[in-house]
Amino acid sequence: MKMVLLYLMSILYIAAGVYHFVNPRLYLRIMPSYLPYHIPLIYISGICEIIFALLLLPEATRPAGAWLIILLLIAVFPANIQMAVTFWQKENTYLWAALVRLPLQIVLIWWAWTYTKI
Image (cartoon, rainbow, N blue to C red):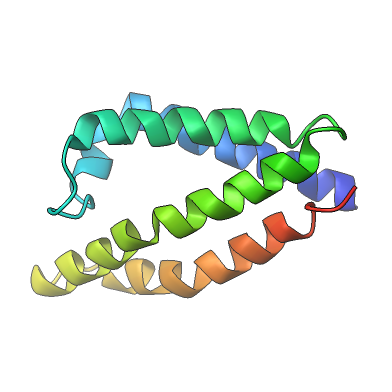
């Protein structure tokens, strides 16, 4: 079961990374205004998601991939906060999803952490 969850995690991060290139405008809306170079950052984070997800697959690089995903999840957390604030200010009907996403980061970090040891 642990391997199934590993492959699921890898697929999800690869898909999320690819989506940065398919629909970068979605990510533009949640970028904190204090960050410069929004589009390059969106593409860089997409590339990182793909590479880190691929690092999960070989056993030799799995711990590094898991730690890098954890660091990425921490790095993008301000964007998740920004999304919740923006949705609240604009009375977006998907505010509930943005709020659920905040504690979900803890679950995603824990999930990645389970693969930090070989």
